Length: 433
Ligand code: SF4
Image 1 (cartoon, rainbow, N blue to C red):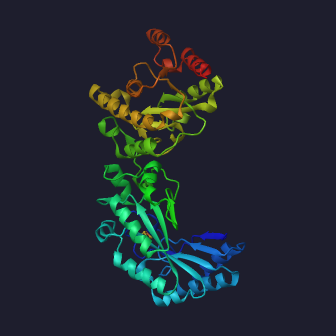
Image 2 (image 1 turned 90 degrees about the vertical axis):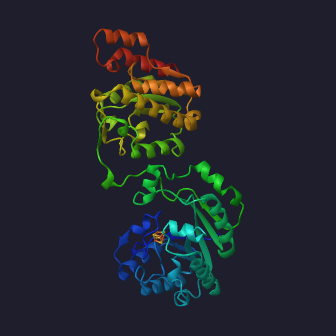
Image 3 (image 1 turned 90 degrees about the horizontal axis):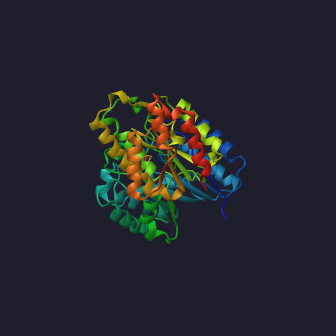
C-alpha cells in the first residue's frame, strides 16, 4: 500500500479567482521561495512514504503562485526522498510541455477542476475555461505519460444540473485516470450563500448526495467527497448584523432560514440524547447565561437524565438545538414581546410550525420522548403542539396545567421560574424509561 502525505502550501493566489462556488480561490498569501523551501523541508522531515499530494487553491504550475525555483526544489526533494508519485493541481492554461518536463522521472498526476463538461454551465459558474481547454490539457498530460485527475462538482446551480453531472461523469471517464466527485457546499465568501438564502439553490443532504452518485459508486478510480470541510452555515463576520425587531421579516429572515434548512436536512442530533426537551429562548444571549436556562438545567440535572436530554429552543429564528446557542445569529437577536400583535404572532406560529415539522420529519426517530416546558399561553407551544399533532408525535407537557394556572391566578408573572413547576419538570423527566 502507498503511504501518502498531503500538504497544503500557502503561496500567492489563484490567477483566476472568479469561480462562483470557490472560497479558497479568494485567499492570498505572500510568495517567498525561501519560506516555501523551509516549509517543505519541515513537512517532509519524518515522511518516508512514496506519494505526495499537494493541494494549493489555484495552480501549482503558475509561476506567479509557485515560482519555478520552488517547483524544481520540490522535484529534487521528492527524488532524494524516494517519493515516486506526485499529485498537483493546475488550471489548464498553465499546463505546458515545458512545465510538465520539470517533473520527468516522477509519476505525476495533475488534478484539473473540470466541474462540469458543458461550456454553457462552465460560463454560468464563471469557470473561465471551456471543455476543449480541459481536453487539450488532458491530452498534453497524457503525451508526457503522466496522469489526469478530474474534479467534478455535484449539485451545481445550473439548469439540468443532475443530467449534466451524469454527462460529465461519462466525459471524465474518457479523459481522466481518476475522478474526484465533490459535493458543492456554500463557502461563506461566495454567492452560493446568498443563492441558498434566496431559495435559488440549496446544498444536498448526505442522503441526496448518495442518490446522485449511486450510478457511479462501482466505477473504478472514482472518489466521492460529501464534505471537504466541516460544513455549517457560516455568515461572513462583516455581514453579521444584530437582528433586533418584531415582525414577519424577523421570523422569516434569510439567515434564520438557511440555518433552519441545515438543521432539518443536514444536521445530526447528538448521539445518546434521546429525550427532546423543547424550551423557550431567553432575553439574555447566549441562552446558556440566562436565568431561565440555568433553572431549567438545574431541574434537568436533578432528574438524573441530563446526558439523555437534548434541549431544543423554539424562538423567532426557529427551532435551535441548544449546542448552537452561541452561534450567529442565535446569539445576536432580540424580539421584544411588548411589540407583538395578533397578526405577527399568526405568522410566528405558522412559520415555526412548518420549521418544527421539517425538523421532526427527519429527526423524530432519533428521540424516544418529546417534552415541552413553555408558558401555557406561549405561541411557541402552540406551534409545537400543532406540529406534533400533524406528525402523530406524543408531546408531553412537563407540568400539570392546573398548577400553572393556580400560580398565574396568584399573580405570579413568571411561573416557569417557580419551584413547583421546575420540580414537576424534574419528575416528568425522572419517570421516563
Ligand atoms: S476553483 Fe480553482 S480556479 Fe476557480 S477560483 Fe477556485 S482555485 Fe481558482
